[in-house]
Image (cartoon, rainbow, N blue to C red; front, side):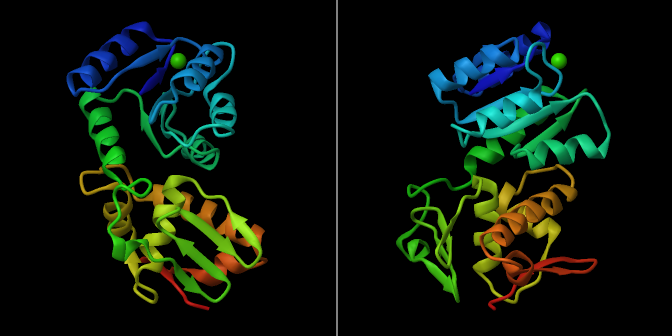
Length: 229
Ligand code: CA
C-alpha cells in the first residue's frame, strides 16, 4: 500500500490505522516521489491526494495508470461533483472527501481488496468465458474481446461488466451493483456506479461503434441491465 499525501500529520495518522490492520505502508510526500515509489514497490492500493506539490494527484494518476492496475482511492478536499468525476474518469476506483475518518478509509480499502482479482478468487465454473455475439468476457484471464479488438478495462470496469453479463436481461439497481462490485460494506454514493458505467461504455464503443450502448442499457430511475445483442 502506498500513501501519496503532503500533509504529514494525515500520513502519520493513516499509516497508524493501516499498519494496525496489518498492511505494509509506504509513503511519499509529493507526486514525483510517489510515482518513483509506486514503480519500485508495485502497491496493490494507492491512497492519492488530489492537491500535491510538484505533480498534482490527477497527473500522478494518469502516469500511474500507464504501469499499474493498483486500486486507487483519491482524497479530495473539494466537494464539487466535477472533481470526483474527473478523478474517476482518469482511473481512480474510489474517492473520499476530506475530512474523513481513518476508519472509513480502512473500510474502503478492506472492501476493495476483498473483491476478486485474478484467478485465485474464481471457481472453475466462473472461469468459463462468456460469449455474446462478438463480445467475449474471459473471467480467468480477466480479458474482454470485442470482435478483433482487445478491450482494456480497469479492474473495476471488468467486475462491473462481469456482474451485469452474468445475468443478461436482469435489471441491476445501483445499490445492488455497488454491493456486488464494491462489496457489501461499501458506503460511498451510488453516483460512482454511473461514472464507471460511462467509462465502460466508452471503451466498448471505441472497440466497436455503439457496442457499449447496445450491451449496457440504462433502466431509467433504476439502474442497468446487460442486453445480449
Ligand atoms: Ca494536499
